[in-house]
Image 1 (cartoon, one colour):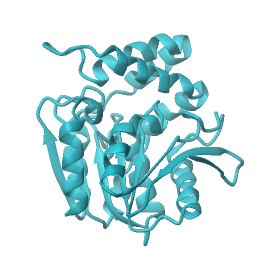
Image 2 (image 1 turned 90 degrees about the horizontal axis):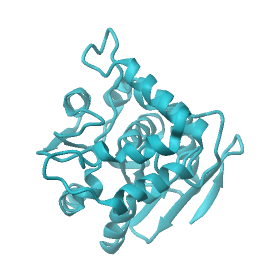
Image 3 (image 1 turned 45 degrees about the vertical axis):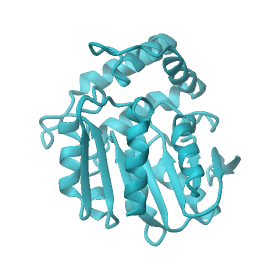
Image 4 (image 1 turned 120 degrees about the vertical axis):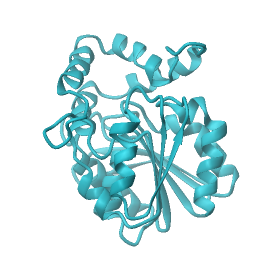
Length: 273
């Protein structure tokens, strides 16, 4: 584990375990690199070098009041990739981390990236606009900001229910999973997480997706209540030069946790292919 100080003085916490080809994991909002524990242990055991960082304002990184946008997120990671001399890396991004990973690969990845995986990811763009009429209305994200500002602890206590599909008929609520989500979320800074809602909902990744020229696997649950598959993965794969789509029946947004027994082997098969 370590800390990288970026050009603007922000400290980025990261984990770097093992040797071999690097796999980099980019976490979702408002979580931390801890959300990838299951995947990091799985791939470490398979002989890979595994890396995950806490995005600025999240987890153990500096709780920044500025720079909470996709350009800065990608630039932060580019500095970390250079410091760790990451080459031939596979990048795996979930949700907001999928946007960050796509933006990094398009912006900085030339010569350093071998493959990309987007899981339940926010690209191409979430918010409803004239160019994206089927997107999520802005007032939904305004509501999230209002709830965060009014009572962040309560908002984050309830958010994992749809995130993991615990509200579906027949689902069993896992209190440890819920508590771990809440723990990670409350570690981060309220201002950074507030700003990040705009970053993940309003950033248009269309240009990034068109520019990415490495093999890319797009994985999404068809019961994702946070990032609807029709507005994200189904559009994303059409914009990629070398994209492959894999949709999972009845899987939720947090399927890397609830269905790791399926997701991890599929990730491994893609990485080895």
